Figure 1 (cartoon, rainbow, N blue to C red):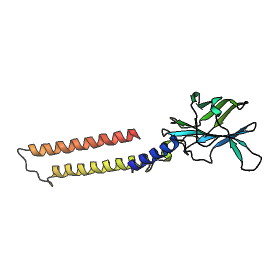
Figure 2: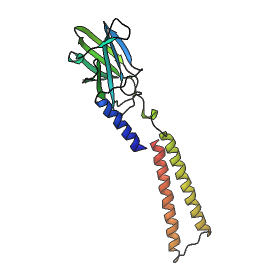
Figure 3: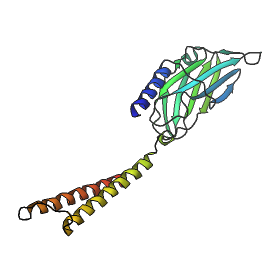
Figure 4: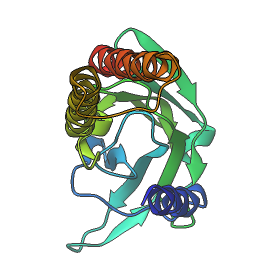
Length: 212
């Protein structure tokens, strides 16, 4: 399953790297004079640590309903900056094969709200806008089974192993389990080995609990 997931994300990443961007309904649209600018993520929901694209659609609506013209070569005269909190980074924007569509690869490293700032001119029209895009989510939104459930199951399994080892030690001490011994040496080694195993499992449980 892990291999399948990696392959799936690899294919998605390859598709978006060549600009085959799938439209989304969660994008934000603003208007500057006669131009309509739509911004969002290429893959939604956006997840922290997973490669994505900031995508833009810049068009001019026609007189007829549903008709528009994609504006090309916008980022020759417009600077794009991605912002998060007090941090900002100027980004390179690539043209999609479809006129008016653009994308910029990015790996979001924190959850929360990202904003795209555009400054410059579109065919002589000044533009200075900040467009918020959908919040980046933690990986838990895609995790299956939930990592917390896995940790609980692991702890339960280790606790069962301890109970089994404690039972074995009790049987040895009570004589229910016999050991061919040489002056008690084999018996001592059996008890010592089981005790070490129990201690190791206890340490493993502590490590799992601290990791959660």
